[in-house]
Length: 271
Image 1 (cartoon, rainbow, N blue to C red):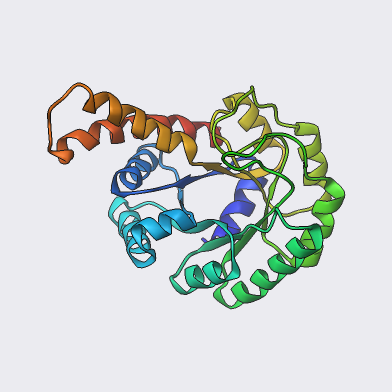
Image 2: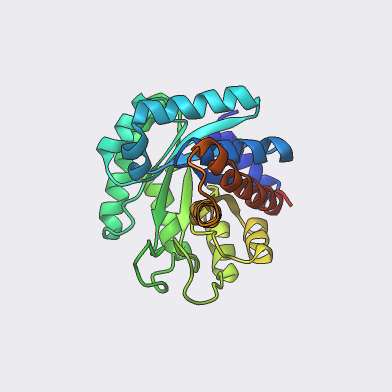
């Protein structure tokens, strides 16, 4: 099954795939363990910063080997690709899905850049995701710039993109105020375009709100911040109470905490 088929199936069944970012061996292992326990597919996400940290070939090799070792359905996705050059590198490295993020550019520039990536990715047969509207990134102010149904319809028709991340009230990172998704707007977008929709910034959004979004067109739910935060909080707690220097004994406690988090999250997206 391809990522395109996976997302279509999820949307039709009112489920979603949990797309999880990994940053090192421990977070990758946590994702795989939780997915195996819950019999969930994995969509492993890498951002440019993670690729720069681990190295493109090594990160892909780690992900592919983990998928094989754990015996579960899995794919690799480029999250928030900020340039065509990075998308091309990831396509050549064997990614199953790529995101081009030109959402901070004017609408026509976003269209042009996304359409170009769709053309480049066509021979590879991979899923192409784009973002439309303002989904606040780390350090940016939350609110405003929501995606409209009219723009979503026009954007998808002009670009031929396979999946669309929409702005309906979520934000990347932790929320400074209680998040509230605009489900009515999501319904309008879903009615206006047939492509699977993506929710970025799910960390901290109440489970019932995520489930409601999935029931109304969201087929992919991104999770990153809570994975990093959970790992680091538990690692710090261990380090402040031990003189142990063997990281092989210290890291597993933080990894176990991420497994528990992800078991819960997989349950949310799959009902």
